[in-house]
Length: 106
Length: 435
Ligand SMILES: [Zn+2]
Image (tube, rainbow over all chains, first blue to last red; front, side, top):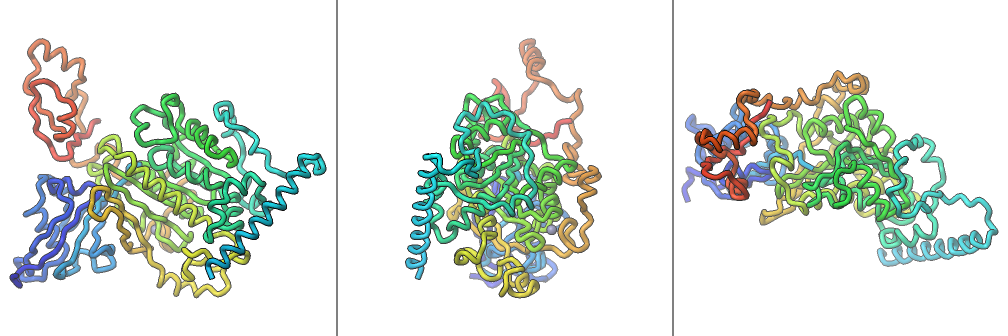
C-alpha cells in the first residue's frame, strides 16, 4: 500500500449513481496531494471523480464552481459535510463519502 | 419496572372500559338524555354521499384545546392495541383525538401516511390536492381504486379513509396550495405533512410552517430512494427546509416520479415513516403529568416550558438533527445521517429572516422563479417549430420522409418500446426542456 494515495469509499444515492454507470458504491485510491501540493480535500475529490470515474458527460450535474452543485448532500462518514468543514475537509484513510441527490418526488 | 407500570396502565384502561360499558348500558336504556358523544361516528361507511364535507369550518385551535375530549367504548376497543403502549396511553390517545393534521398531497406519500393517521385516531385530518386520480397512480397511491379514476384525489382518499376509520373529521381542500392561500390553509392545523412532489412547493410549505410555528414532517421519493426529515420541530428550534437546502437544485436536475419513475413500496415506506414521525410529534404534546415520559423523549427535547428543562441555549447545543435516507437496492438500505441543523442566516427561520406572512399572502414571493422556473436551465427551450407531434411524424414516415430517427431515451425506456428503425443513442438523463 502506497502512502501516495488514500483509500476511501465512495457511495452514491438519490439517482447520482446514474452519472457513474449505476455504481452505487466503490473504493478508490485518491492521491494524497493535489498537483499544487495541497492535502486532498473534498473539492479535490469532486474533481477527481468527475475526471476519472464519472461516465455521464454532463459534469455540471455533479460539479459547479469547483464543488458539488446545489441539491447534493455530502456526508462524511454519515455526517453532513458542513459539520466537518465542507469542501475544505481533508480526507482521511478509510473515510466513506456519500453523495446524495435531494429528491422531490412523492 | 416497565412491567409494573405497563400493568397498572392496563388496569386503568380496564377500569375505564368497565365504566364506559356501564355508561353505554345506561345510555341504551334511555337513562342519559342527550349524551355528549360526538355524533360523527354514526355516519357509516357510505363516503360517496358526503360530498359537502369541505364546507365545514374548522374550530380555531383555542376552542378545541379547552373542550374536554373523551373516548367512547368503541374507541377504546378500536385504539386499545396502541393505547396500551407506554408511548401512547390514555392521554396520548386523547391528544391524538384533539390533534388536527394537514396532509399536502394525496399521492404516493400521502396515501399511506393518511391511512395510518386515520387508523390511529387523529381527530381532524385535512388533505390538500387538486389532481384527479389517474391509472398511472394506482401502483403506489393505495387509497385510490380503479373506480375512482377521473375523480378528485381528495374525495377519493377521504372515502377510503372513512372505510378505515369513520371517526375522524375529514376536511377536503380540493385546490392547489399557493403562496397566497398557504397561510390560511395551514393555519388551522397543528402539524403538517409535506407529501408533495416539487422543490417549489417544498420551500413554500416550509416557509409557511415556520411563519405559523407548525412542525413539518417532510419526505420524498424517486425510483428506489427516499428521504425523510422532521423540520421546525420544536417550532422555532429545529431547522427548516431552507436550513437543510439553502439553495434550490438546478431545474434540469429535478425529476418527478412521472419522469424518473418510482417503485410503489419505496414511496409507500416513506409515507408510512412520515405517519410514525407525525404520531411522535403529536404524542410529545400529551399531558406529561398524567403519564410517564414516553421513551422516545429524551430530556433535551422536552418543550421549554417543562419545569426542569435545561436552559434553551444548552438544549440547542446538545440537540442533534437527523435525516433518514432509504436506498432500497443498497446493502444498507436505511441510514440516519446527522444534519448541520439551524442556519444563522436562514431566509425563513433565523433572526435575519426576510420572509413574512405578508410577503406570502400578497404573492410577492415567487417560488417557481426561486427554483429556476420551467425550462430555464442552460439549454434554451425548444420552439414550436422544432417540435413535431406523433401524427405528423407518422405521416412523414409513411411518405418515406422520416429522416434519421435518433432515440435519446435510456436503454430501459428504449427496451419497453421504440419506433422501428430508430437508433438508440442515450443522452444522459435525457431532459430536453420543452417550451
Ligand atoms: Zn431555516
